Image (tube, rainbow, N blue to C red; front, side, top):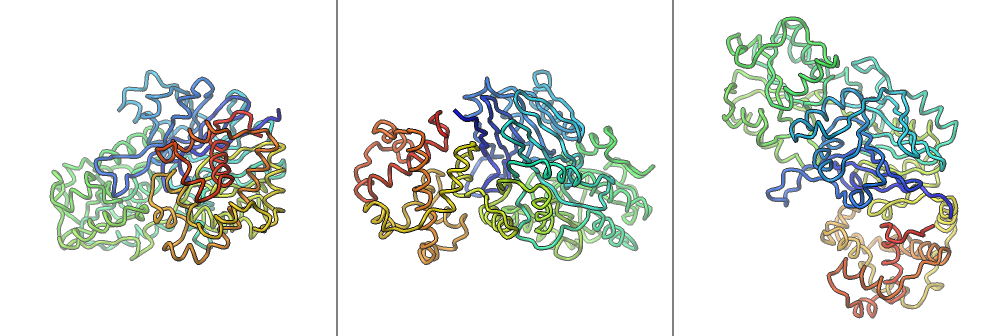
Length: 562
């Protein structure tokens, strides 16, 4: 049996947040990132959302390590919750380790967790994997990408990245190493898709520092700055601008205080002499000499800025003598809460300066030209867009295809399941996908009937599996309504026909039998019923079997898959 490498997305696809990917090779598994996501508006009583790690729990004896790209919550937020189910060593850079340690202390897991720090440029052996750490630029210090080396080939996992030629710490992304890997040959590239909708390049972090100096100079008000607590380089620029203007700085908000402590102790932040003051002492200074750095850039109800806005903060009473600078953009889904805080600040007579009004925030994610540069350097055999909502993944795939890449992961499969790299199956899948003639006349009559009368069944099936409505499923795929999907159904038909042909060929090639018991069990898991009669009558036995077979294969429930 040929060797195979499985890439199993456990989170971070078709969504922002909850990033987690498992790599499985030679009977062993490593995991990249372990993040949380913000709850949706319909998740009442939920504080955070974490990935489903039942597959890892089931295969805990095969786990060899957890590798973290950087210290943002959408990459480390779920660690303490996952460690309570599976214990595995964590490999990360020094600053990321400092942030993870705070979480481990809070949950009483320090003594039971092996936390290993690795420098960019070093390689860690974890079972049959060799994981190389590569420095990248992002909106948090010590961010890395991974080159995951196996006998099947090398997979490059970029994590979150941008290309900043003038970073605050002077450490430019290691483009030379990405180029070297490209020359050596890369099997697959998994790249950040967050900003793929934006043309051009992402601005340098230094652009924000110039804005701070401009906003601070000549201002006679107290200045309150809110930003992401983890953005050490942004906070460093606030401190530098305050010192240059003769102001003192106080910090409020638990996460901000923790980040300041970790970053200064580890040497990632250099506080200008005689600049930092306690929040209770700074109140004695004239307003024109005060700067307060606070949490709350996302409008979180328990954050310090929220409490200031709604007059519940114990140390800071905010009013007409204040200027609030919001140095962050709203994470998708947080726009309403951020807007609520801004509106309340305006009601109190506060001068509010936010992203739409000035260059107060730059992204930590690559725009289109940077994405093209990464693709051009790495030259992967296969390209897999990750880290983003469905439209972002799709557009990233189109961007790669515009550069002449043919082997872009088929999103409908990869988003909901796992991607299997196999020396034989790769060639078969690629040949079938590229060469299959989309001709409904050659398909069985029951499948033709489905494509003639029941175009909506496929998205409905996916919607049922994901626990969302059909409308939500279509919206995530980029359609504004069911009618719009039906108007564009011809391309959907062709895609599904190709998928059926491919899955049937793979099943036949590998002697995978989809018997009645397996069909009933899988059907029951999706729909809560073992009675397939009505579905078979409506959509055809061949089509129903093919779809259930597809999901059995992709969810690793048959071990002898090609």
